[in-house]
Each structure stands twice: as C-alpha cells, then as structure tokens.
Length: 371
Image: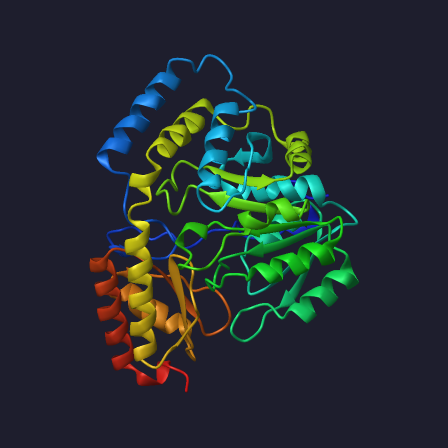
C-alpha cells in the first residue's frame, strides 16, 4: 500500500471544477452559469440582518431539521408549479451537489446502478464513483432530446436504483417533456427518478416543471437550487421535493447539523425577497433568446435552451475558439460534446463583449467553424 492509502480508482484523478481565471485576465466571466446580477440592496440588508442575528447564537447547533426553512421552500415551490407540497416533502443541503450526493448515498452503493443519458451533467458520474455505485450512461438524440424507446429499454435492462435527469439539461439547456418523465418513472419501478431542475426558473413560457408530476409518482424527486435564479451561488443552498419516505431516507445519511445557522438564515431571508431576487429572470431569458438568434445568424448550430446558458458549435478546434475568446477577455466553458462550447448568459454589456470577441475570433480564422 502506498501513502496516502487512496482508493485505487481515485489515483491520478483531478478534482472537479471549471477553470478559474482572474477577472484581471478575463473581465467577462461567462463560464459557470452564475446569475450576473447580485441581490438588490433591500434583500442584501435583510440577509445581513438575519445573519447577524444567527451569529449571536453560533455557540448553539443549528436546527438540524431546519423546519422553518423547509416550510418556506414548500411555499415557494407551490408558487412555481408545485401541487400541495408540504414541509415533510422538502429536504435541503449545501448546494444541489450535496443533495445529489445524499441521494446516491441513500439509494446507490455497491451492487446498484445510477443511470443518465449523455450529454449530461459532468458531476453525476462522480457522485456515483464516490458512493461506489455503478455508472451507466445512455444516449440522447442529435437534438439532445431523449429517445424514449432507447431510454425505457436501458432502464428495463439495467434496473437502476437512481435515474438522473437534468431538466433543463446541463450542458445543453434541453428541457424534458412531462410524458418523458412519466414514462421513466413508470419504467424505473421502485427506483428513484431525479429530475434536476437547477435551472428550472429559466424555463420558457409553456415549459412545465416536473413539480406538477410529484403527486402522480411516489418515486419522483425534483431538485432545485438557490444558486442560479436567486443569485445566491455563494450561499450554497440546494433542495429537493419528493415523497416524505424519500426525505426520511435521505435524513439517514445526512451528517449531523449539516446545514449551518448562517445558511438557514440567509436562505430564509432570500425567500422573503423572492419576487425581487427573481425579477431579473425574465431579462436573462430574453438575453438568452437574443443570443440563440444571433449565434444561429452566424450559421452556427445552437441547442434549444430553457436555461441561463447556450450551447453552440460546432468547431473543428473548439479549444482554439475558447482560447481566442479568453485572449480577448471573455471566459466561457469548453464542455459538452466534441466541437461545442457553452456560454452563460450575462448582462447586455457582457453579452455584447462576447459577440464582439466571437466575431473577431471567427473572422481571424474562418476555418475554425465546421461546415
């Protein structure tokens, strides 16, 4: 055995993370799907006051069941597609990443399978790896929608205990149709089907939330985050809605007092200002749609997006395009299928700088674009 005694399958691996480049080198940061607008002054002041009150009690452990926060989250979800969600159907953790890991800790493990359809969120196989769960990945159609016949066959063949379905999908922005979610909930039997709605608030008009289907499927889990639409990426608060039995199962694997008093106070204060914090969502949707139209006007392939980012391509050397943008102070993400790039939606000024930079990159070497 060599020191340190790391598990063999982890040797040589690098920690997950998007490239972090200083704002001095890349003033326009459009790579990690953050909300470009911070909390307004009233919300910030209320959060600061709530955190100040929490600080006075830091000698005590937080409410490990965070009852008040679960009730506030249930109210919010019922206003955004939920149908009578109650606090005992809600669970929260430090970002939706921890929520997902807890789900895999509870329902994955040796001899069990977690399944998704590529391209999909790049952290999912890491959750499976970390919980010693077998990872199985199916395929999506050319337009990144699900081939339901293929999906049902794969679920029937592998019998996963966890199916992970981001909607809108990261990195493509593709939303799932309700009938696809229903079909996979039925195909999964007693396995849980997790619909990851980290970008759910950015969905286009007429695109329903999977929250509407919760009363119909006891094995459905819908996850959300306050990092994106709520502009609270630094607060680290993710949550889920599901059958109370699923929430109780996750409680078994959670660490003691995992959600700090400061985090709970921050989230509760933010929820009190939900309309103000979400007021920019419509602007970001409109900027996303303008970006899609502009990119298609260049003759590029662009995925349909219900998120706050756009996947576009395709390029013979996408890294060269990424580097060309970075050289001009614009940082986007080199992710997704070969030849594609992803840009987060920023402010109108930031998107203008992105358009200028991409135009210059393409004009400097037209061969960068695939035919």
